[in-house]
Length: 297
Image (cartoon, rainbow, N blue to C red):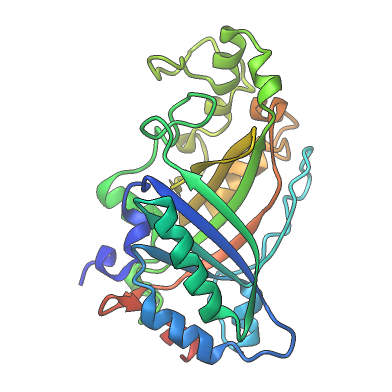
């Protein structure tokens, strides 16, 4: 059986037209086992991607090698909020109203053990572009390379092979700052020409593309990004999600972006900043449903 058939399919599929993210915390004194079994019996990993936090796994007296809570980056010159959570659901779909109905059903399902603490609606903008107008995920690995980057290998063993770790950050764009830049300044901040998406050789070293060139790390720091824009009123930004077979590649990228590697911070921080930061483990699937065997469920 191939790794891709063991993975939650929504991880490898292109981003959907609409999405909703639920971030949940376990209630004090609640036993999550029954609720998690019900969730696993209804979530298919395609329309609903499920992620569990390290604190929830500990509560179950279980262990997932490599899973930990996000605690920021030592030596970072930029504020990187750490907002750990117990459970994360990524609802994917074609219709925003249908996602609302599904999320209400899931909130009722989770209610005996979990509180939904945050909800974020997101969408596919202009064929996969960020709200700034720049294409997102240009250098994402494809095909077998995406599988290799995003999923735990077969050697991880039963109930772990095909699973994935995901780093989630909600970034808030200060659009007025970005709009105040000249077109050239905007291109140099990103490191690409917005219209052609071509990388700019004369972009400054702080340009985002130069800071995060995944092949420039040792070892190479490839992650599978499935980020989507969000908007509330006149505010907006990006729900950044990076799937990997470990958190190492994401942390290498963020360390360099935040200036912890060499003191130079990514130009993105001139107009945007993360408001949240959390890590989760996305279990594999078996017979089309979430497999919680690694947790003894």
